[in-house]
Length: 410
Image (cartoon, rainbow, N blue to C red):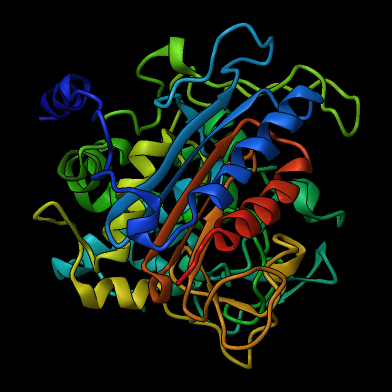
């Protein structure tokens, strides 16, 4: 069965257009204002800020804009194709969230389940006092799946802090997938204290990687195989997975970060990971991911293929934070002022923010330069793919957000 699924994904052709195309004006956009995306990106490419980019903008189920700019490679020798494959880093997390919810709909788990149901070794947790692994107290309660899905588990990323405990944690999802097997990864986490009491602090970390292993346990498949069967094949996302399908279309960053002047390189997806990390190891194209985003915007269905129920999408994309949780989201995504968090996606709350959009919009982005958001009130889905693994990725999230909403006329 595993071989068959892999053959099916490999044989799927890339779609000529990921969604039906319509004139921008028919979808409430100004073509002239949308062209600001081109002029902005081409100017930045000419200045050497990024090699290239691909953007897909869908509204009311149709593509208003789908363009590629600049070069595929950091050496700037190959034109950027529309179907360029990017390492999407943490944009893997919503894929894992959807895979998990498909199992919920089959009655095989509850988001309130303790993680000890699946991994008993993650029970009897200790919590570090002031980030010290040598001074700990008992956890007040077990970690639950909802803690993992909204980053309130107490598990952290080693690279996102300076305490002694941070130095013991794996630095990131992608590094975990190259250093550990799935069993070794769980064993490492089981041997470490938590940074916070479960359910008390939003802290970005390895939580979604554990969720991916829950999916593997219940499906008896690698995470990529489970996702192919449940998401990629039904949605016709042939270039999304944990290894690159066609290396000739793999997008790479500039060899020198234009901000820090330090060398930079990303190779995620070029070699198979030791385990398919649900927190940050997938690759995809703008065309594939806009279909995934449109499925969520449609309430779980696309082209007659239902991936999730409308109720599950609503639960995934509502704010699961409450007053008892310290919200540190802006420490990871500085633009997400007045946002909460759902099940693997951030959710905008009513009131002002540093980004344009509407309450109820949801989003998550990738550390290597990719971004996506869905705005149900505006009937809008946007995917931006670029190889900008440095701090410039935050700049482009703001700029693309402003350019897209600035082009809307209704």
